[in-house]
Length: 365
Image (cartoon, rainbow, N blue to C red; front, side, top):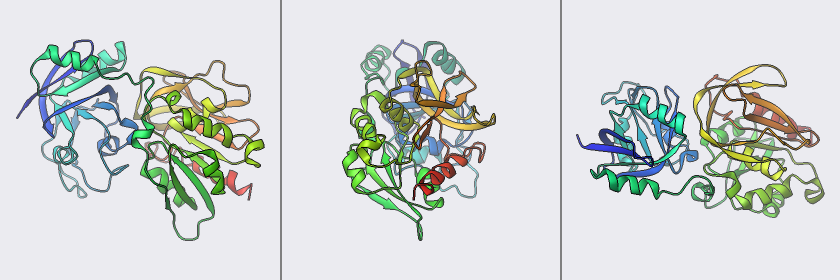
C-alpha cells in the first residue's frame, strides 16, 4: 500500500493510499454525486483534464468490464474516493477498479476525506490539483498552481476522432452528421436506434464539408473544455444555422458542449460555473410541459440566461441553481440541452429529445 497525497492549488493537502497506476495526475478537481457509473464517468471524454472525486463513500464494489464504457480509453486524469472496495461482486464484472485504472495508466487515491474536499470545492470553487506519491507538499503546491486553468482551453481538439467514420443499423431512415467534440458511445447508440445513419466527423470539420455530405440533421456532441475556445466549431455552426448559406433549414441538436457552442453561434454568451454540474441526479424542469426530468450532467460552463437573444426560447431550467438547461430556436428546427439525454438516471425521462430530433428531420424530407 503506497501512500499518496492530493494537493490543491490553495495549499490544502489530503492524505490517502494510491491505487491503479503508480505515478502522478494533474488537472482541475471536480466532484461527481453519482452513486454508480464510475466506469462510464472515467471513460467520458468530457472529463479530459479533470480529476474526479466521487462523493459516494464506497466505490468499486461492482468491479469493471470491457463493455460499460463511453469511449475507448479513460479520459479523466485521476480518481479520488473515500473508500475503495478491493472486492467486487457483479455477474458482468471482469476485473477490479484498481486493475482497470492500472491498465489505462491512471492513478487513483483512496482514504481521502471526501466530505471535507467537496465542501472546500463548493465554497471556493473547482481548483487545480495533483495526485502524487511525491512527499514534498511545497513542490506539489507549485505544480498544482502551474496547471493551466480550464478557462480558455480548447480540449475538444484533444479528444476528437482523427478520421471520419460511420455507424448504422439496417435500412436507416435519416442521415445525421455528428460533430465529435468528445462524443459518448451511447449518443451514437440512441441515434442508430432511432433509425439514423450517423457519420461522425472531427471537431475541426468545416461547414462546407458537412454540407457536402447532404445530411438530414446535424448533432453537436458533448465534450470538455471552454466552449469559447472552440472557435472553429462556432464559426462552422454559424454557417450551418444560416438558411441563406445552407440553402435549407437543417435540423440541429446540441448536447452539453455542443449546446454551448450552438448558443455562442446564435449570439448567446457562456460563463464558467463555480464548481460545475457533475452527477446523475440533477432535477431539470421542462418549462414547456412543466414536467421534471432527473438528468445526468457533466459540465463546468453554462449559457447565460440574461441577455439571451430574443430568437431563442428557454425550454429547460436547472432546479438546483436556475441555470439554462435547454433552449430552442423560435423559427428554425434547432434545439439543445445542457444535460445528457442518452444517459438513464430517470431512467427514460429525456428519451423524447431524440424522438424530437427525428421528427424534425422527418418533417423536412
